[in-house]
Length: 571
Image (cartoon, rainbow, N blue to C red; front, side, top):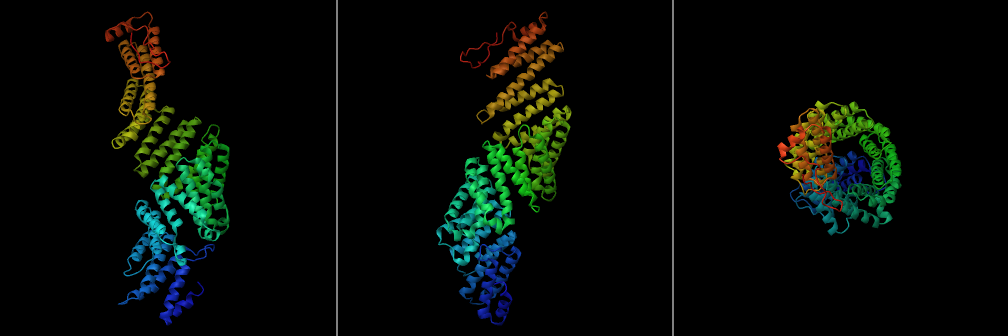
């Protein structure tokens, strides 16, 4: 047909009556070829042919009384043009052409052709970064296909119900509606399983995309067994006939499928199999020289699987390569890759800390903080990395810097908690504990105790939120240790009044918690205080002046004989 185009163009000029319809039909056939197994022309050429068809049909609609066939032909040519513009990644233009197709006055568009136009609009919005706006046209498109007869033969290559379902599933995925996305993908996969072998030839690419994206959605939902059950079918889709017909199309899908399967195997307790699959994903991703982001995905998957005792050296090597790759990608697309670079640097710092290289751990975490500062709008992640930086600075004995980092982390998290108390309230307490550790390392034991008490107060206001009670137990244990340390420091400094104050605070803490380790530390603290001053009655007198009762011979008695710690009663 492409060979005939010069002849048809000459015929259209010399004999417009029969020549124009023939040329328009030929151009549209070239723009959307019907043979599914043939390698399609480049999208730019297909778009050019469709644009030429629009130009060929338009003069017939500009007459005073245009014929119906001219109006119908122009609307169809515009739909095809929009479809090819999406393929050429000219998404803004595609949306404009869809509006023009639906706005041809007097044109009679079949439901299937209208669905094709809506499908082009939904795709343009999804791929153009406006997935939220794509929800409505995607839904309308699916409804039209459901309620209409199958498309005419010449419109099948523009779209069908399975194609529309895949676009709707993708739109759901991008906006985070993963459960709805998986439901749509499951329906689409079921439809594709039901088609004949002849019909399936039209959907080879779609089938590979749907099965790979479905596996990824199931993994994201934690439905690992279901994702693994898809493995034979999905592998057949990406390693079968399409791998010989369109290798450049299927290889990125294959890498994505392997990474999802590796993570599912790891999550279901098969680390050796997961490692093998992840290595294969990395090996195949290295063949995609023009798609480094696929290699980054595979390397990150392998790094996660290597996050186990005994594999730190290998993980360090992988993370180092991954950090370098994200650095190069972030130079061109900082919004997309700076956060991934920051997270990778944080993981790299954790590896260095495990191996005892605390200075490298601090340096990598500082780079992660700088990456989040460059991209902005990620205050929650910046606060997390700052807290990690404080912990690693503490390990490197840089108490002053650790306090500064922790203070900023707490300030950021407090600000976030003002608008989302349930999420960031517990995190505020956690970062107050990091700050307490830092100021304690700096030698200010009193300030450390105050920060732990503040963290406890924050958590007590959040009782009822899942996970808060566990955080409260951790905070109470840390506070008990800090109070015990303060008691010993005050005794060593010969300041019995302050030692008694710390003992009283520790005793009060036992009344607020049933944690056995807190109660045990209270008993030990009192016993050690008495043992250290067996002949000195200063602490006894200080206690009696402060409390008004004799110094206790024991702190509390257990009243629950079933083994559960009871609240203390002072003697």
